[in-house]
Each structure stands twice: as structure tokens, then as C-alpha cells.
Length: 65
Image (tube, one colour):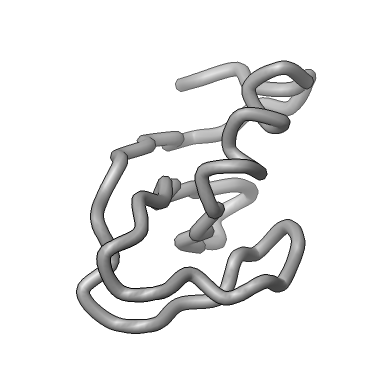
């Protein structure tokens, strides 16, 4: 079990990737263009699994919060 931002997640796993196709940042809703670096976070919370993609800028902000 991981603890992150005062919440308890059953699973929390992040990986940094280079986009192979266009994505949209879950935080700022700006596009993530092919070739740009982004973070993909796999989260299981309260039995629900989700994948969240954050652009590099929003990931830095997320880490400081």
C-alpha cells in the first residue's frame, strides 16, 4: 500500500515515458505531443483502477505538492 498526498492507494506506480501518439494532460488538459516526455501514473483507489497522464510541467508541480 502506498501513501501519497494524504490519501491511501492500494497501488500507485509512476513511470516516465516519451509519447508515441498525442495525449492530453489530466491536470492542465493541454496536449502532450508525440516525442514529449510525460508521466503515466497507474492508481488503484477504493477498488477502482485508473491511469493518469501528466505533462512534464504538471508532474513537477505534482511532485512539489
